[in-house]
Length: 271
Image (cartoon, rainbow, N blue to C red):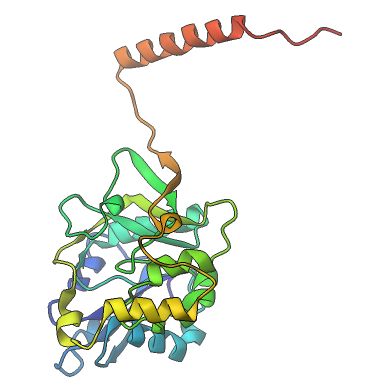
């Protein structure tokens, strides 16, 4: 058993095979196949099932039915099957997630991705952004967070409203438990909606969001509600290696500014 787990609802056009390339994976793979070919992709997975239905109701049942095993993983990623990434990227994503002691996060999207929220596109020179929003397309949960949130996964068949709800259910007083990980980016390769929506036309995002709101009247989980809109509470940026000339200029600049500031400050009193 690896430290981390990836759970994915996959169809015949799934990109999950790329997730195991370019490095030795530090994660196990649970594939939940919704196509018609018996045992399709089974040999690629550590855990496998074949079942029809939308992503979140099935994932909810899968997690509940296999909780004794799933609860042993330190973190769980639940991406859509049209996400393009390799094992090196996913390994890095999990390492950053654990290294920064996050509860809920997602990898940022590349600039050439299809997207619903431009705020989730990768920011240059950024490692991660502590925020208040993670999209249902690619969420990562710590074991503790999944313990507290797993009941909600089946409460919105389309997934709508869950991304606004989850931050309300996580203890995050320091605003450092939810983040977008810019240093690990993935590509969303298909227009928003996806194959599962086509195969399950009964899904009604608007109705699901309304029903979810009725289940949690103590929270306003409307996407238009100001406090739910994307915020960056703080950001960790990449360090840069400067050229010799720039290093000299930056050193001189810092020396001059520090000297000016120091002159205006009263000195520490002598005994």
